Length: 273
Image (cartoon, rainbow, N blue to C red; front, side, top):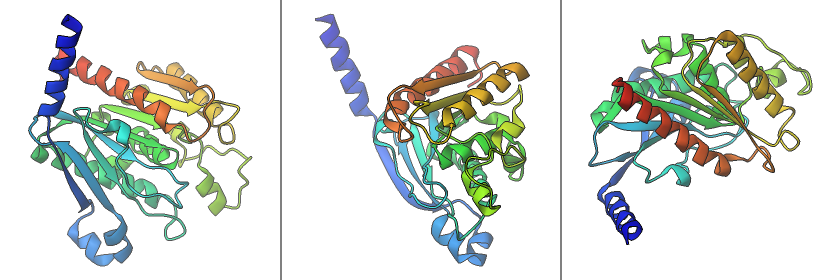
């Protein structure tokens, strides 16, 4: 009887939260949008947020697609969980080359920091997550403070970074631009590994099965995880999802949500929220 009562209370509470969606919001300034037609058409974001709640956490979700395909979308597994979901589009190759993808990611995350409180959210609870090429964007803007500093945002204000099968070495698209084969690893200023540091935000690395993933993706992430530990980073975690290949977002989403809940609870108990 008690279990049924608790389930009923939880159901009522879930029903009390109403969500609202706003689509195709430009995240670059008016002057940039006026000067670049592709930016004005592509650099837009959608937001799905609790309408009757305050101080909610926000998850910015960057889709994957090798920087050549893909479209912003709200992952169904992240909806109706009490969080705001922001999903940006970003420019694709061959229309642009790196590091324009990173520039777009930083501009979108900066927009969230500067605007989320007007929707009722808490700027101290902004999480940045993504899959594949989107995860690469996540890692670059979270680990290299340069990109967000262009908007006077401290990258360390990100509450948590969640990378689902992201490249930690210099990505395929950059090596393709330079005529370097996929099997030749490169680590330079366009590699998240280049920016490993002890004071980075909490970092969750998730990959598929090492035998099913793309070109050593698990091993890249395992190496980053080890280097973070050696550098003194205190909140990094690595998961390998046995039996899943590169398209591993569905089993990864519960881990993502657990990480967001873990950190938001920690912020509440430490009084940092």
